[in-house]
Length: 246
Image (cartoon, rainbow, N blue to C red):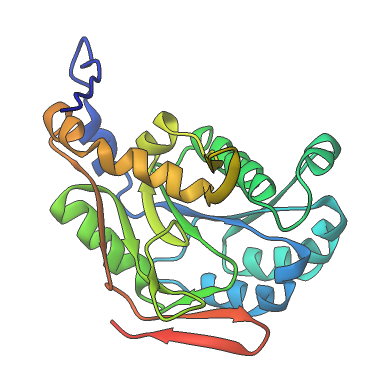
């Protein structure tokens, strides 16, 4: 039998007040690379029409595509009274983490996580740049989070194979989660050979899910709910789309 130990807080945090404050004020957090620019136009047109609309859309990209992203879309977002921010990876990050690797997406997600932690918002919708939920998706996810007391709500997304993902690609999260957990990836080694990878969102969400009994004891809120709550489209490659109906 394996026992897990988490230290209880010395004083019960008054988290319920912060959870109710500005209930539906949220930002969108999205990593994007040059290989996903094919979906950017549709992604941003979709996001600025959400109900309720985000207060801010924050992307994290390589520096060489920053201007391409900002050129048109900052004005479009501004016209909808939505702040638009593009974070860029540093040169040392680019050298350490080659393109199309878990290391690079992990660094990007932690940039976004740190931005969220230092923002005035309590809620963030993590949304991959090739995933397009229905217009009322934020309202539906907030309803579940606030009425059922979940710190995170994940909507399934169709994957490349015949299965559904329950990663962070479409997940509403409270700031308390991101303060407590960082993104990290790793490899699984067996008999001296790498046989598999642990992705950055798998590690993040695995820790979150395991926290559930402690969170309920500390603040009366549960960790995460997973399901098909909203309809969405996943454009896994240019012109190749998979739909999920709620």
